[in-house]
Image (tube, rainbow, N blue to C red; front, side, top):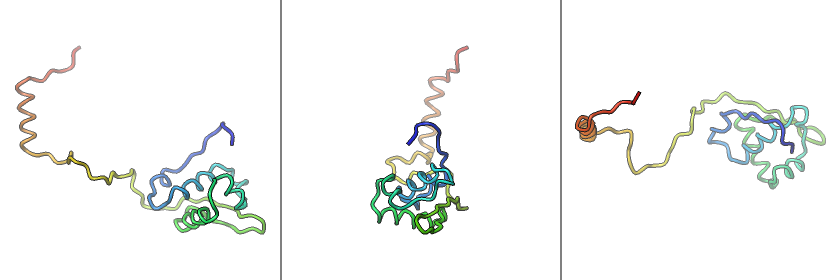
Length: 128
């Protein structure tokens, strides 16, 4: 693998929680290759991605089911065509962990206490 250049990955793929990490790695590797070099055998993908055959097949099926990948069967190898399906994916990953404190709720008592502290000490602005 060369060190020059870069590969642009769509945010939709990164954010999509329906895809496994193996499917994302397969998509990234195929995106890394030029479209004219996306005619590959399974043996090549197995060695480059360091996966077993069942994991590779599962990743391929997952990408095909979600609409990210179309495979054209050839006699000696497969031609991989990448697509970006139109999906409704949230703009950012939501934090689903339950926190100890609910920072979004503002209670009247806390707000008035905070305002009283500001008025007692006075508000100092920025120095010029």
